[in-house]
Image (cartoon, rainbow, N blue to C red; front, side, top):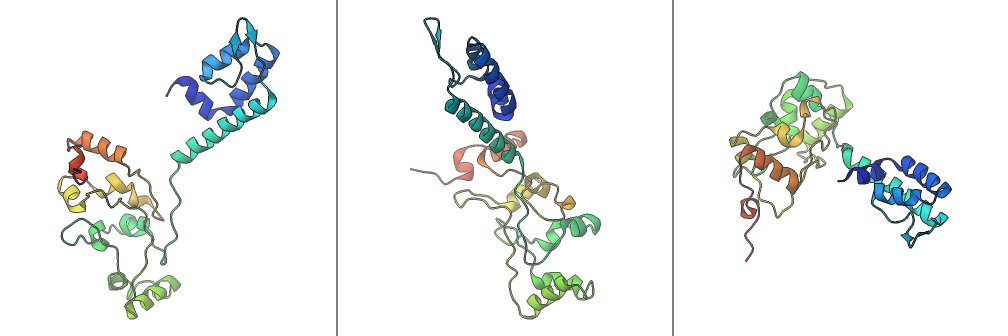
Length: 219
């Protein structure tokens, strides 16, 4: 991204200031366009400079503000989804030192990591925090053999081949794709999971980036 484009996206106040300067001196429109690479300021042909009309001016500033908001939103992680039973990875994986595999089993063929069941949780909580409303709700799940409908945080598209077991065997760790889970009170999507991020990781670790390494071959 060019320097002017970046300023245009992230500093709409500067754009407003330059437009005001341009209105006082028509020749400043040329500098405005050159800096930001846009053509809503003015046009110069044969020495004639067309002044910026107010609606267009407002549109330019509004567009800059919108782009700045989008850029800021892209940098922020989505909020943690509410879960049916409150669970703190910071407490369990951090302070208590539980291993990921304690609650997340990796059944054959190894593609998916399982989520904790009520019966699994009650192995510890049968005697721990039994007065907590959350643990009492958990005990009811276990007694009635009901599945806990945990809200998904990460999801891989169905057209992508992905194996947790293969990645773990290759030396990857959970934090590579899920971020600093041990520090999270509530689990949220802290790491980008996109084709570009996967390819960057593959390149850094010497893994193949051939299409058919992760996708079905198309005829």
